[in-house]
Length: 110
Image (cartoon, rainbow, N blue to C red; front, side, top):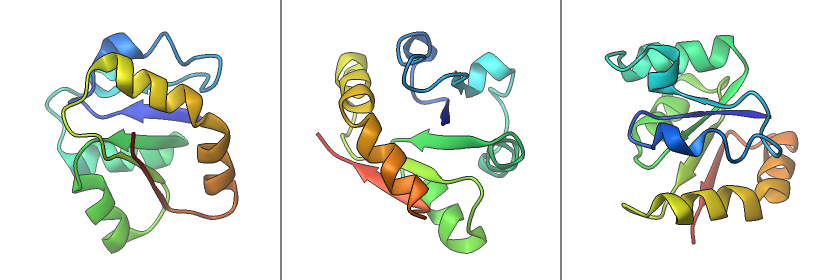
């Protein structure tokens, strides 16, 4: 499973979870800094990403358009990069199991 981090999540996170989430990236690293949520949504779906965001925008799109892409909604507020990385790594098995069982959105809380 590969993740696409929303532009509000630091691009500096990308190298660290590669063992658990190979080929993951961040919106700005793909040259999509000015892309709309819909453009990011379409790109993620076409390229097999799970969208990762801290706000409800992509969750709302999933309710309207379904999947792909699935959404990983980080419900941790404006958390430090370390906390976000810790959540992604410690919960990787649960995240993958949820998406494999058909979940379209997984909410992750500290």
